[in-house]
Image (cartoon, rainbow, N blue to C red; front, top):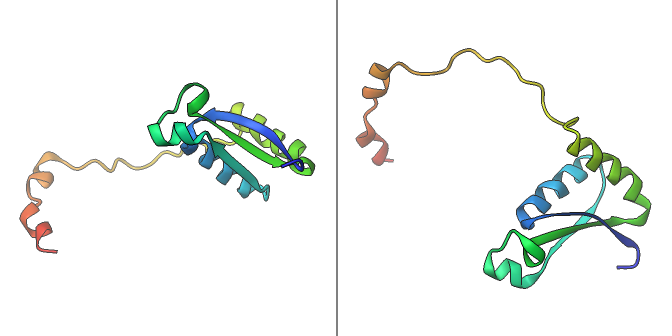
Length: 103
């Protein structure tokens, strides 16, 4: 793994996979690893629970820019106002759950 460099350390493999998907959206390939004992025990904190993300040396600078933008909240979606989609209580009472079991 000499051509790869440690980019980021996060809590658990789920966080690592999420960041991997983010990096891929910027066309940056990465690898995520977690200590096998941490995976087996389901740990997400401490040394065994942490997961490491590695990127190729030539992608490191661009990947670090993406991580910095993520940490600064620059990649968050703007809030969009939606129409109120709540249902009045009487409509909820009319839903027949028995029909749903037939499928």
